[in-house]
Length: 99
Image 1: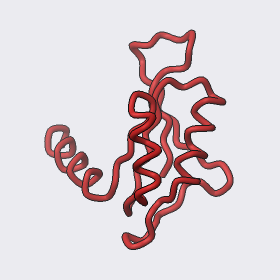
Image 2: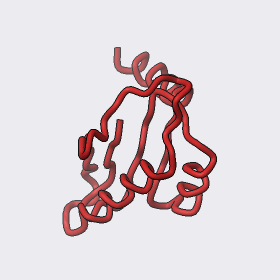
Image 3: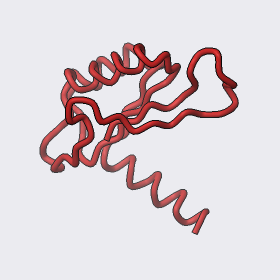
Image 4: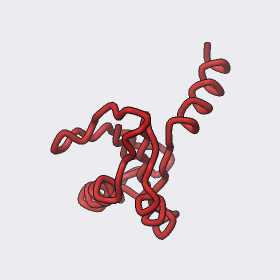
């Protein structure tokens, strides 16, 4: 799943923008063994730039390759990666609070 999270420049930055992106088959459910590669992370980064979004988050049901993580680390203020384990922790944390 690809998500754009942040605010478009010129809009009220207190209101987050969350948008699932389905460009070129971008939203897929990956098997845990099939990791998201740097090409897919760069694609999200490009969409983020094109849409003037200040922060992007890529969440996956699998994990990320080393190169994908390195790319995200170089763009830490603009891009977050959430893998399967982190996604489960977030769901458990917030599902319990809002159930």
